[in-house]
Image (cartoon, rainbow, N blue to C red):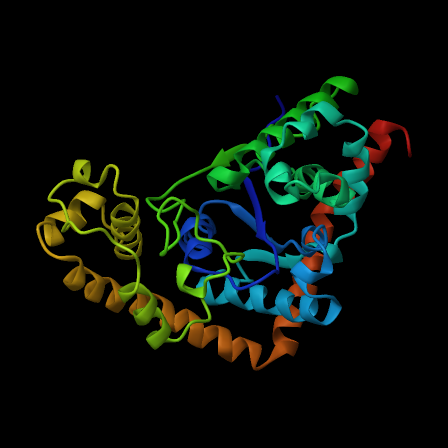
Length: 338
């Protein structure tokens, strides 16, 4: 197989508030990967419009959300000098490659995508073609840069498997080794942060209860209040990790503390095990404020100068295009368009 340069691509949608789950599950790892890989991080605005406008808010809200998410990336530690930071719609090769991949992917593959079934619900017939085809565009997002690694959450693993299937089938169909078989990167103690109100559900920006999540835009007082109101059970903290089994809320809060403090769950329990949740929640609230309040402050500073954020995205799109354009040109030659 062709040797591909280690390159990372990942992104988030500009819909709703980014939250602690986005930060711990993705952004922390994105920042670390800047020192070991060539990294591209995009705001996936083309994916945002696969849902009804009532979900993403329409054009004015979308423009504002794109800047907010880009500011959150930078506030969390994404350095536009080290990484290429851009919004997806500025690089037209994403859409071009997605069409080619639509002709490579198979209906049966998309029919197996569980996330479409979850998002479409019972009204599958009313869902947009874009929502159904979302994983093919995601494959194009990744492969238009010959990305070798993608940091993903558990809920995106199936989409990345489809990306790999598309790359393999394209290579086989055209007798080439043009696309890499991208590897998932799932790492860290908090790749799946759960709701503060229900430890069996993932923390989500679509949850109707704002108390279920800690938003990156929350004030220090909001962060403290939400953690102190987080659901727990009647028992105290166990002395060992084994004691967290069957206790989703306790397991979630200990996991959040471990991730924010960069300690293991065992180390956290060695410190707090045997105590009551009230004391632990106070310590967790203090830690979360110390880690997240500076991100909030930096986001506010960046958004006070939207022209700067816009400039970062425009520059990132130019840099991204210098990678994507020749790859798309080669695809056209392989397929027979050029």
